[in-house]
Amino acid sequence: MTDPQPSPQPSEGPEALARPQRRLLARLFNARSAPVLVEGREFLTFQQAKRYLMSLEGEAREAAYLAMKAQADRDRSTEG
Image 1: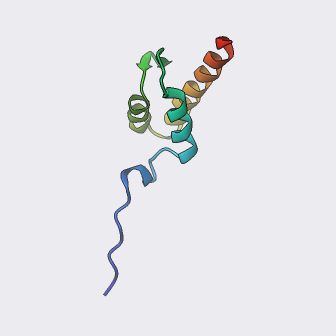
Image 2: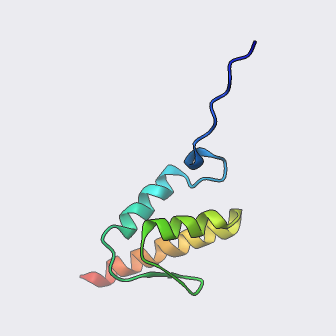
C-alpha cells in the first residue's frame, strides 16, 4: 500500500510565481494609489497583478514581471 501524496497548494505548483516574485509584488502594491501599467493594462492591487501574471506563459510572464519591477523602480526614483 502506498501513502497518498498530498495535493500541491495552488501557490506551489510549477506554474506558480516564485517566492521572491510574490514578495516583491506584495511590497510594490502595498498601499499603492497610482496603478502600474503593463502592456496597456492597469494594476492597482497585488491580486490583480498576480492573476494577470499567472495567466501568462513562461517568457511573457517574466517580461511582464520585469516591466512591473522596472516601473516600481522608476516610481521610487521620482518620489523624492
